[in-house]
Image (cartoon, rainbow, N blue to C red):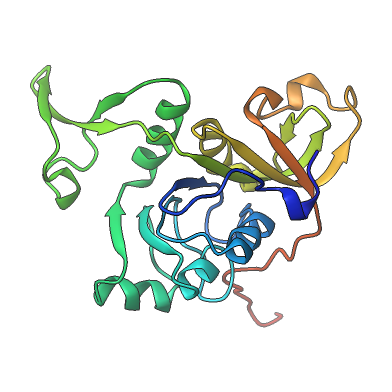
Length: 228
């Protein structure tokens, strides 16, 4: 098990494709993102539902100009993302959320591509192969196979079996499976055998490196109402 300082030894290189788990600021691998920032790896393509916020999550890599391209579903909540995209500094490949999740899952399952109706007739269909099945038009989407996956889980045992907490599971399992190498950060590492097998969400066969740490757990949008 690597120390936090050695979590990425031999893994990072300029121009690589990284699949990152998380949704908004929920279940994001914030410690690993910080490690990439510290390493200074640049010209990155990152497949992730979104790009964090201006000063947290993947947004910190935008701030340091380490990201060249995002493959994402949602790009709100981030003024720097908008600025870089509109100025031509950042490339963006939009994917519907379900399509992005399936592209990651397909890549992890060894499936080169699949046909979907989602996005047909929109800008996301431009330049993609189309076929008709049972009178309906579908378009081809390719599986994502990343050079590296970074994910966040709640618990792990020393073999890398992961348990995610509630909605923090989100994109983490498919992101983990589609990377040639997967590094996971967790809140707690427990002894092998202490996790109930039926409660394991991702088998350790997918996880190559594991680190334990403390997390900030920001709330992206806080909505309150006055007491009655």
